[in-house]
Image 1 (spheres, rainbow, N blue to C red):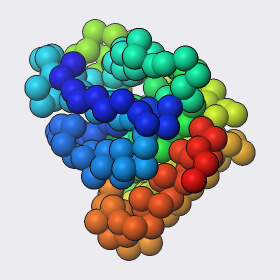
Image 2: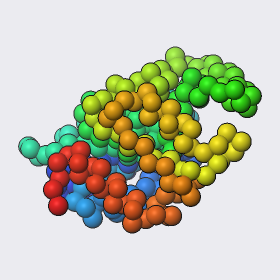
Image 3: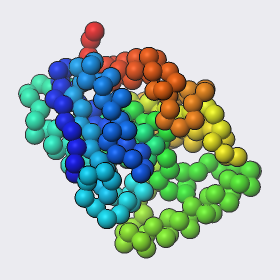
Length: 236
């Protein structure tokens, strides 16, 4: 995996994960805020993205194992007494961040902005016929992905997100409708319901998808830093 690493000044390092079709540079703004606040960062191009090797994207199905590799990279460079590892991601990067935390207890806190679904079951049930069609279509896509990737489908997010407890989660979403399905609040509220009391949700009313840093840069940075400070016991 191709990436950049900045060691921490306060003992905690945050893994940064970009969205689908992008690369690590999408998370440069987040990296700047975190490094300025004393955090280390590890940001890498996800498999088959940017400069990283790979011939296919797996829609987040295979990516949690790469999070494990990132954890090992950081742990090999941590000094005794350092505070820990957090993770933050946008879009499918947010989805991978949540999966990564569910599967890797070494991750102490998760900031997920616009996290997408893993499986069709993650789509909220609704009397809206569009939701029913979307769920049916995604069920077919899950089956097609299994064939294309040659692997069993992973559990849906709603079945694993509570495994992150008691570690803190911040679910961030845009409040503006993306389509006839509504805003990101619909899916993030579903994740919040299944996550438990360790999770919080922040809906940025005027945002659409992962554009909170552009619309509210000062507030976004302050909230993100405060979240990780609380998780890792960083005092200012």
